[in-house]
Image (cartoon, rainbow over all chains, first blue to last red; front, side, top):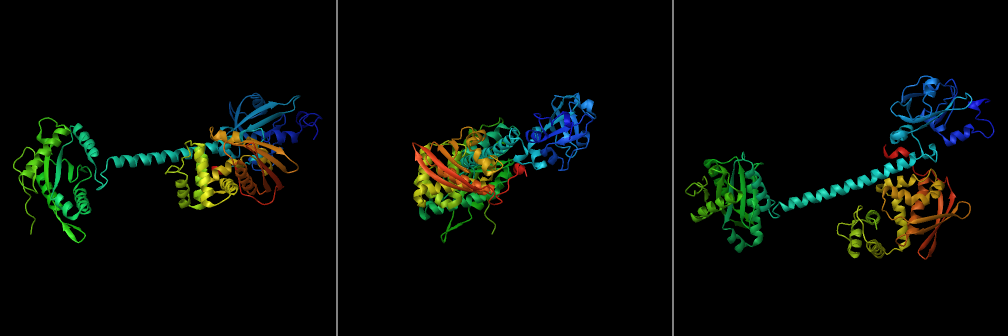
Length: 345
Length: 195
């Protein structure tokens, strides 16, 4: 091919084979915009068909710094950083630069993948050999994959740490035997609710009766079984917004929200005592306990009570209930301690 | 030693010999109960203790175990990201070998504080190379030997490795590439990780 692209075949000049190896994504363009030759990688990106003889403007679309539809417009952009796209792959913007060849010999346009390189490599199915050894795109891909792998490890570590933290927090707020809340969780919830002036609640202090006898005569395993049964009763009687905690060997605190009327509290306390009195089977024997309950409610105070005050008043009510005999409940500010009505039948 | 290296050792023992063996090694070497963490650093002595416990429990020659570790790093499905990163070293096994000296820099691109061996590659005849290695711990040559034979399989090349001894902490490994297109090898596409 004589007179080829401004004397590219002149001895000592850069021939097409050299260009193909050095710039595998280039186009050699005649002065009228006809493609005279193209790098093998660019050919593959265009679908593998030879591009020679086509107009450069039918193969690619100039986008930045501006469109160019003819050679004068294209050559006005010589030397600038171009954004362009192949007509066959408009979603994959490429980077480019164009330079005029001497003596009216047309132009040389070189292309690289630009920041969308990872998507583009997949889309065009490129391999290591499709890039010039001096092109850092392969290193960028390497780095991107390495980053992704390290990122996965970091995420896994973060996940393990947050699971461990959640477990530790749960353990810190849970009574290990019964799975109920512990004293710390109860204190936090009580403080939280008392800080909210809209929250109405009653606090129940439940103390088991005859628990010591079960422990002494049938052993600690029997005692534990009774505590688990009591915990089940509390869980079944509580609503989602309520909270039950084991705060001592056989002592429980319960927050009942929105239940503040005396008759409703009396009914709840009576039901709890009755259910706790249900005998618990353990190794062929029946363990029987009951419960005394002291109750204080936020509605009974002129000013919002503190948590300490509320707890002290449930303690006092519990003491009155115990004094009056077992299996009773007492409400702070109300007298006298009541015994739940006998079970029907 | 970087936790990544300790984790690789733990991962190898667990994957190849099961969690019970790992617990035995862990207890014998007095390693942390929860095992190694890839993002932490550990005393070199802990890495050595772990490896020595493994050779004792498994009754295996250290070099054989080290070579198995190298093979595991390239072939285990869970370590596919690592195999892919290694394949970026070159389009062919020969190119990969010639890029070995770049491997420490490549590794540090991913993990800047990872202890990588010093690697010197010397041509020693047609298709033959001598690789001199120096690392923080002994045993890098058999590990790399395992990595290289697995990578040769990966590229579909046939290569023979030979351990050529240790002198003043410098370990030497010889590689002879017998056939660069021995088999089809395993697939590697540049964009494969996105697919």
